[in-house]
Image 1 (cartoon, rainbow, N blue to C red):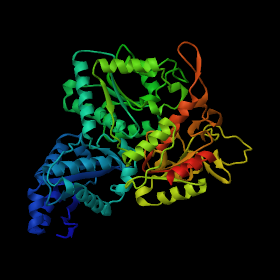
Image 2 (spheres, rainbow, N blue to C red; image 1 turned 60 degrees about the vertical axis):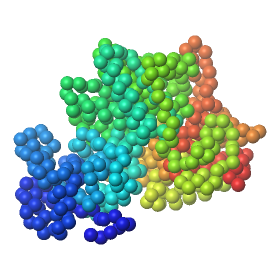
Image 3 (cartoon, helix red, strand yellow; image 1 turned 90 degrees about the horizontal axis):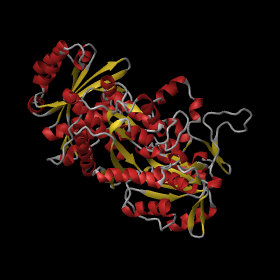
Image 4 (cartoon, rainbow, N blue to C red; image 1 turned 180 degrees about the vertical axis):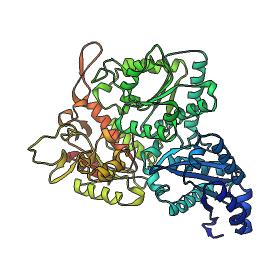
Length: 588
């Protein structure tokens, strides 16, 4: 076998997925292999992948076995007997089977390879469904240090055969579905939190308790979304494994982009087929459920986006309270620093009451480990000082995996972000900006001098997010229908806002700090008078009937959301001359 970086190449064989093809492979094809290959396929743990097309998209099943030939025949037997099984769908289609082996495969590594294949394939746009239940990620084993290299080689080899089913790893890792998937290998902190949540849920249901709240707080990038989706999916898997212990769960998020991601995950993993609608926006959940018949568990991602006053179709006073009344247990993922609009503002006494309620029942958890940004602690501290303390410290240098750069013009910033986005590993690099320029996604006025609602600085201008999709043809619109804003190829020509980027990652974030962000007398100032974000700067009517402005703190939150999007780097252009000068001095 050929060697690559000291590790043997994987063995990958593809055959038609039916009994006669398997018999031929076993008797003739396998007999013609070298002794070592025969031994690995026949006796070593093997990963296998069934795949077939349903209309134009794929359905897949990934497994691992110590006897792949016998295990495959078991699948065929199930398909013959059960006409509703995925195995029958596979047998009725022109399916293919990939058999994947390696001389270093052991039980633990094949389980990890199986889990990662599931994670990747759920994230592939052309995959409609993954029929496995859940993965079983492993901890330490020998040789776990070879896992990444072996898996990447396997994925590349599979991609040579079918690029639609196995696109590049960088493409997969950039997808919003991948980042929110419940199939991530959790950190120790996340595993501990997930186990606590499941334990508390089961205890509450066994004791017939209602109105319970589990409150998880964490800054941007601490893994709240993955923890939420993983725990949500784990309870569904446990229900599927034990029909006598059905747990009714819903996942709720008040974010248009994120709800699309969750709906895709629920569909691809078969949750909607088995349980019907499980992903909701808050108002729809409240309107379609009643306190008289509460579900078991409501998971709320980005709970800081819930409304605390009536708006549009929601006529209540507090969406969280209404959800609590419609679920026996409510799991809340919350970051106070990401509240962006007046209808999301929490009066401190009310928010503290929910925290207190969770703490009194030992249902309060805090996530601390930064997982999004590949930045060292000094760099994280610099961003915290800017976005929380409103001060500019010396910008740290020599961070191996993260870069902060200050630009003199929006043109230079734009060119550098486009250069980054042209790299295969950094395609998810975009320009994002504070909401300091007019934008209306619904109304298109006639007689306007400019074709789009735009961010304009001097001679430089660029359309706001969602403007360029109006120019796309029907085929192009279909291609981007389920993609988050930053994943859509035309958005390299746009400027994103907090309303499209909150909750998502970028490789490099090119942040334009508009006129609302100033530097005066040694401190950063957030000026509501310069903002076009009406939702942030308008008055908020409090519970006692008084009105209060929250513009400065909400604009501060807006800047924090923008400046914590980049995984590998933060590039900044400031419109305010004094701020730009202070940032340059801090970078020297």
